[in-house]
Image (cartoon, rainbow, N blue to C red; front, side, top):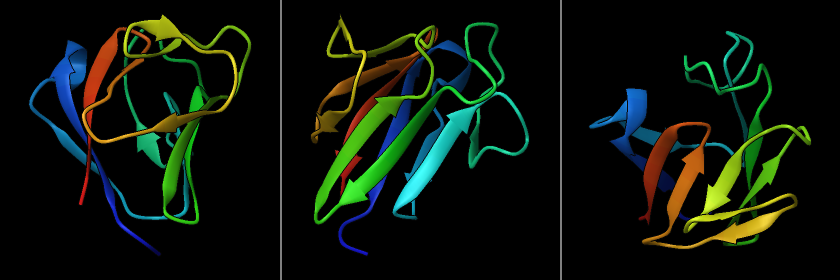
Length: 99
């Protein structure tokens, strides 16, 4: 795997937490079967997927009702994540950092 990705919680129930994405693909959701579990009323069972292609990271909503925003703009399909981006998943926001 290339560079790791870290999500730093800046608002909502994950404020202050750091989540390290350490596999090529990880699912974010509210059930224990997900790789990254976030308990929040606005998070669906299988909400979004973070995946790495070559050395680039991408976020993809997994449901048409999944609220995912990148730098304040709602996304409906796969979008590239870059260092410094603000990623909102439901009512939780993360700063994206890659190392």
